[in-house]
Amino acid sequence: MRLIQPRLVLILFFLTIWTMRSSAQESFHKLSLGTGWAGSTLKDKVISSYIYKKNGIPILLEYNYKGYHSFMGVRVYMLFNKLKTDENKGFAYKGDLGNFVPDKINGLTHSQVSCFTFQTRGYVLGRIYMDDRLSLGIGGFVQYDHVHKRFLVLSYENKLKEGFFSIGPQLMPVYISGPHEFQFALSASLLTVGARKLAPDEGSTTRVSGTSFLKEYMGVESRLTYSYSISQTIGVDFNYIFYYYQYSKPRKEQMAIQNLTAGLSFMF
Image 1 (tube, rainbow, N blue to C red):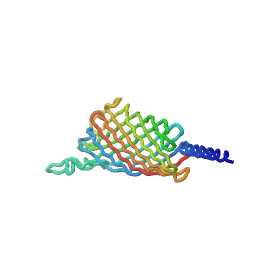
Image 2 (image 1 turned 45 degrees about the vertical axis):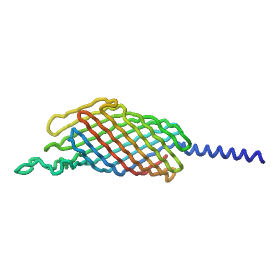
Image 3 (image 1 turned 90 degrees about the horizontal axis):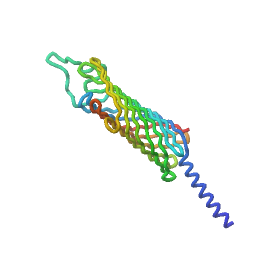
Image 4 (image 1 turned 180 degrees about the vertical axis):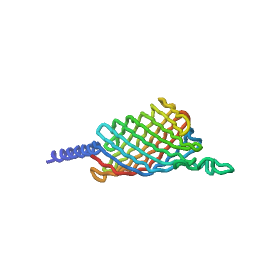
């Protein structure tokens, strides 16, 4: 009897450790849909030297896989807003006989930039375990950004279309404790293929493009996520995402977007 008790204790101990590791390392798929608040700041010298700002409502659709040895995910992000500047407040194209350039054309004023951002992103990370609850993902990402801007020059509307294809490294520590999950992701672009196309209503279309390795283009993203599993199949996600990029062709452009989102997730 004395021999059996220590053995039972050891067996129960190792079964408990194995269960903890299995629950922390359990593989699953997750599909998430979220929305919330986004604050954008733009300075694009192709448009003007002003700084434009505006809040908007983003849409975030994600698929994530957490496996024993890896993390993988795909994200689709959309945001539409009309950024505005106060630096030219009170300015108007007018003379003694009144305005010779309308203040508003096609829903835009000379203080606004209409901006639509569409982003797709995928990542693959190897998973390194620090302990039963904490692990570190190390790998890389691939991202494509499409940005469509409209702005006025005198009485003409100009369309500026941009596309950036980027790859780079990504780090993502993940902490899981029961139904709670915290993760922080940090990534930066290394190699980018970019193009900008300016199509004015009057005049010729111009286009610039090229490949950049830590030169003409720079993009950085940081993300903090808290997830809570209501059940084995349904949960909620809360995200803070900060994204910044700059491109120097043909003139320097800088864009920063902060996002606070919440949404439902479905595990399977």
